[in-house]
Amino acid sequence: MDVKQVLLKSDVLEKAPWMHSGDIRPYVFVRPENRILNPGARHHLDWFGHEPIIKNPMDLRELSFADRIYSIEERAFGPSNMAMPRWVFYDCAVIPGFVAGFAARPQALSSAARAALDPKAFPATGSPIHKSKVLKEVQDLLEMDWVPLSLFIIIPTIHEGEWVAHNLCSVNSLLAKEEQFYGLGFLSKAFGLWYANVELCSGMTQWGGPALRLHAHFGALEVIGAYAPVHSHAMTITYRCEVNVLNWEQFFTKEPDLAFLEKFEPAGLELDPKSEVSQVALQQRIENGEGPFYLSASEVATNDLTEILTLYRIKKQS
Image 1: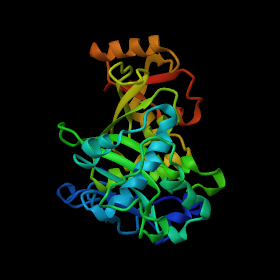
Image 2 (image 1 turned 180 degrees about the horizontal axis):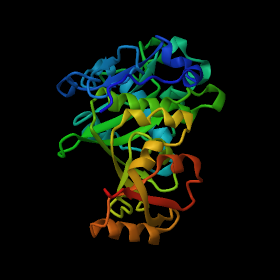
Image 3 (image 1 turned 60 degrees about the vertical axis):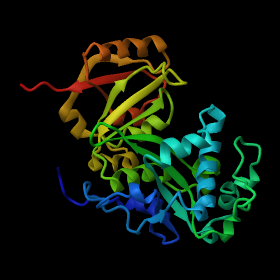
Image 4 (image 1 turned 180 degrees about the vertical axis):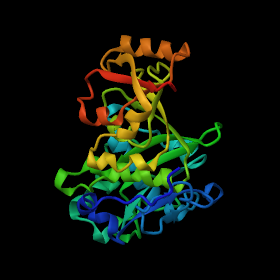
């Protein structure tokens, strides 16, 4: 692996000044037993200059932080009927894995951002914020030390070295364009993968959805499942990639991935993101051992996501 330090280009840095402010830092919401040994040791990357904030989900004093993570997720995915029940967040996310992202000092945020991050202002969005006889209602935002802006849930699997990217969203989905934090979603996933030394990352997203553009840039994207009737949304792609930080900058620059073209070639097959029949046909090819099949991050980034996608395979050795 190339061990050079990978730097964000100056044009990207200019668009993301929030990355340099000590008022916004990466966070890790993790129980002590799940803390990563030697974080950031595998991938040689120089993007994250601030020490992460460590929060413990087992500590009652961090309940307001958890409530705000959950509130972002619920409002981002609620309209598509894919919001997590609160027990799933606890049982399937923070207990086996951890949550990463970026958090801000509340006083440094605009009034619009503070309003978007206040779960008390959105009582009708679904699951209520936590209330009990012994704990007061969710803490006022301005009383908190840090407020989460994004969340990336990542869970280890039995397959050694492989983690599942379970959920990713940010406050950007709740803000007007001029109020958004440039690159927040991508950088939240990048931080989590880098911090946890993830070798293989698998995940799920829906065909034709904009999230595919983001997920395709963390390494060559293998389609390990083209159709998922076990999922609540059957027209879902299940992907896996070998994490490669040298691909990450291209998400921002939109430069062609020449390294991909050196290693992969068209497989003579296509996938229609709008067609269940097309997805089932590819799924059957995968089950028959005809793969592996890959998608080009450059094509996913530049094409209309409802258009036909070219499938690629590893070039045969001559």
